[in-house]
Length: 280
Image (cartoon, rainbow, N blue to C red; front, side, top):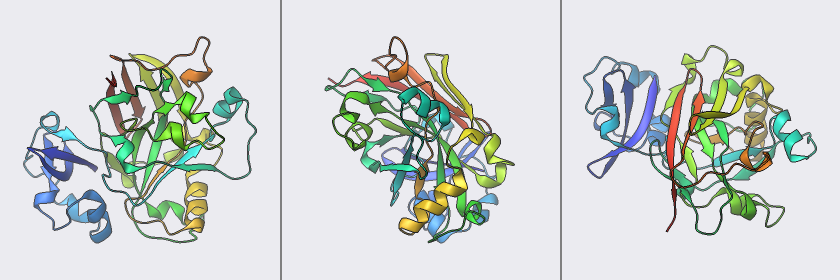
């Protein structure tokens, strides 16, 4: 199944994405958001609506981040060997983690905002892992049982602000710089998550291309590690890291600018597309 969050006529909801459009699950369940649905309902309860008549065409709504109100957005840095190499950093035994805030995120087809303060707005295609049930100190062997689904993510990075200090956060959570969508594809649709292919395209040109078996810290490792720190909750998001090919490490550098279109595709999951708009 594919599950998305959206607004229609100013009302926020979430739904099941079918070939015909969106079946509004917010009208059919008491849970007000997709996070609440994951908390209170079994994913199987949505399956009975896969053949229901669509309430809206997919392009007739405003798309929101897949999870609009996550308790946690945990981002992973330096998690592909090629990206570590291009940054000149050393591989660490444990994952490099930082946080995003939900207010920094936008949905599919919404504009990524290049802030006034910088001309170094970079793309970072990633795979987001959405947690489906609560767990603490989850073993790697059991970790995949906690995955509700996957979505493309663009961890748009303001590089000069990222480098202001040793902490990543200033460049990683500017308003409107993180794109999350177009939907969450449920984990049961993915036979082997390590074979998923991640590609980023800027104005149609492929700038990043990898598979998840190239991760330094695997998805089970990330879930186990993060859940040791504090409980993971339904709707929590782990953004698993970007591969090599970021714009800041190219010669000459390649940054996103007003009028560009950036796409992040995850095979078997979907394509996230966003125009870029310069803040004025």
